[in-house]
Image (cartoon, rainbow, N blue to C red; front, side):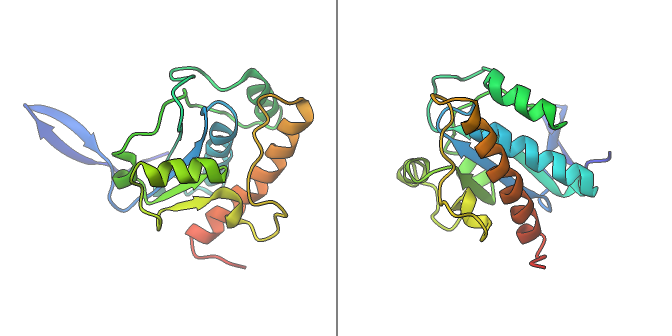
Length: 175
């Protein structure tokens, strides 16, 4: 797979710069170990299957800092893996610069959305993830962390269809 990057020099060193033509998508939940890494992994899987990964920059983060540096929760890793989905991220906390760097910031729930707006994110960039999918009956992706296995399966199904709808929307395909 070929990714286009712009190259710049700082203090004589070559640095890869993000391609300004890429669509930049950031998925956000509270701890960045369940919902947002799953959304990121599903999105990456789908754009790779479509052969359009070169058109996107994708990441995930959390509003909290409890799990910074950690891999996703073992339950979501196992579930994603059973569907052939790789979750590449390590948890990180949202940064103010994310609000400038990303075109679309997809939150898993209203609390995360409010936190981002309070930190200075532009309302026009911040959307609830399930608002991307008109067939969803809920507005928020429930946090499965303290629940049982069924909660993880529920969010997998929700995010699977919502990421598909998001990609179609970003590409301008509403069919």
